[in-house]
Image (cartoon, helix red, strand yellow):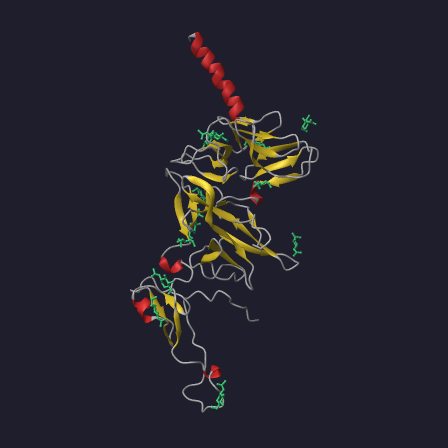
Length: 365
Ligand SMILES: *[C@@H]1O[C@H](CO)[C@@H](O)[C@H](O)[C@H]1NC(C)=O
Ligand SMILES: *[C@@H]1O[C@H](CO)[C@@H](O)[C@H](O)[C@H]1NC(C)=O
Ligand SMILES: *[C@@H]1O[C@H](CO)[C@@H](O)[C@H](O)[C@H]1NC(C)=O
Ligand SMILES: *[C@@H]1O[C@H](CO)[C@@H](O)[C@H](O)[C@H]1NC(C)=O
Ligand SMILES: *[C@@H]1O[C@H](CO)[C@@H](O)[C@H](O)[C@H]1NC(C)=O
Ligand SMILES: *[C@@H]1O[C@H](CO)[C@@H](O)[C@H](O)[C@H]1NC(C)=O
Ligand SMILES: *[C@@H]1O[C@H](CO)[C@@H](O)[C@H](O)[C@H]1NC(C)=O
Ligand SMILES: *[C@@H]1O[C@H](CO)[C@@H](O)[C@H](O)[C@H]1NC(C)=O
Ligand SMILES: *[C@@H]1O[C@H](CO)[C@@H](O)[C@H](O)[C@H]1NC(C)=O
Ligand SMILES: *[C@@H]1O[C@H](CO)[C@@H](O)[C@H](O)[C@H]1NC(C)=O
Ligand SMILES: *[C@@H]1O[C@H](CO)[C@@H](O)[C@H](O)[C@H]1NC(C)=O
Ligand SMILES: *[C@@H]1O[C@H](CO)[C@@H](O)[C@H](O)[C@H]1NC(C)=O
């Protein structure tokens, strides 16, 4: 063995020591662009990466598989343009990403100052910043998700005041900045999950019936796979994600086109496989056929009006522009002037099957 080989061997073993033995960032152990921390189970690592097709440097949590898979990104809206960045803990206890000029490009933004803290990447993919004196979590990536949703994550209902607990898409596969699509649970009268395009609904799950979302025909919830609404004693609720077989790597991701997918890494395959998607056909897009329209992807054209309704604007409708929707052919009896002689049949209900219930459904007890 030559001296060079010997030195390389020593270097290699030192490198391994540094690279695979720690899951924690300490004030005294920042990580540089070329370094990573790895969760104890080796499933996840945190470090710098560039998406395919981009030279920008982001700090992210990556799934340890052969295809680059960033499930969380810190500086998504402020990437670095070179490899001079570091991730470290500041004197005030905040976890930060610094550029080559030591300027803060991303911070955990805690206001409680001067805490002795460290950041640990857990086996569950959660990155927690904890107070070393008592082990308390000060900040965690689970509560600040990017575009992905993994086992054990909890999503609180959206409210107008804060939207931090929302999954938000990337702008494009090569640009991790916050895109226009988001995903979360809306408490409404009966909870539903939504994908929004900016603030407009783009897809909805249909109401939660206590076991499944009734507008998702193939979501295997009975076997504890997917999203679950958990009610709390005080009447509030939250949503969790759990998967039936946790020995198969799997997660939900909202892509830059508003498509929510469950991806799985099956043994023997070289890439993620899509096990479920919210957009199976055009009819899954919210309001595709307009008000009182009904969508059937097997029909041509896909949109028709509900029985008793006709297109609001036949010119637009016949050109395949369904946005104006349909309107009643005849007024309801209860809407007509009561002092006139009642004509025709009495008002009643028509039962429709195999359709999503309306958006603002109410439960009748
Ligand atoms: C880390 O993983 C090893 C090997 O799987 C295990 O023995 C050890 O208990 C784990 N440590 C922690 C802190 O979970
Ligand atoms: C990634 O996982 C493989 C096994 O699937 C393991 O051999 C390897 O050490 C892991 N890589 C890291 C950086 O932990
Ligand atoms: C890279 O970003 C820094 C600021 O973070 C800026 O000063 C510098 O000009 C940029 N370099 C290039 C080549 O864009
Ligand atoms: C931290 O706070 C600054 C200033 O208020 C803000 O610009 C930045 O977006 C915040 N960063 C995060 C990650 O919330
Ligand atoms: C911070 O906490 C760590 C772990 O408890 C300890 O080793 C270190 O000395 C502490 N640092 C300071 C500045 O108190
Ligand atoms: C999302 O909304 C934007 C702006 O309202 C619109 O231009 C775009 O077409 C929408 N995307 C989809 C897929 O509908
Ligand atoms: C994939 O979907 C099927 C059907 O919905 C389900 O039975 C199966 O458990 C899913 N696989 C994983 C790994 O979640
Ligand atoms: C309901 O209880 C949970 C857990 O105890 C708490 O996090 C939440 O803020 C409470 N919500 C309201 C509206 O009081
Ligand atoms: C979970 O997946 C693994 C790997 O595909 C498989 O060997 C195992 O039988 C599955 N377990 C269950 C309960 O389905
Ligand atoms: C129908 O739509 C066309 C094109 O948008 C418009 O010119 C026309 O005025 C509309 N007709 C009615 C009755 O609203
Ligand atoms: C479809 O009709 C709506 C309502 O009249 C109109 O605003 C929109 O521009 C039309 N879209 C196309 C593609 O013609
Ligand atoms: C209802 O019909 C009566 C008798 O024709 C008429 O006087 C009244 O103004 C109508 N009311 C409405 C709200 O149209």
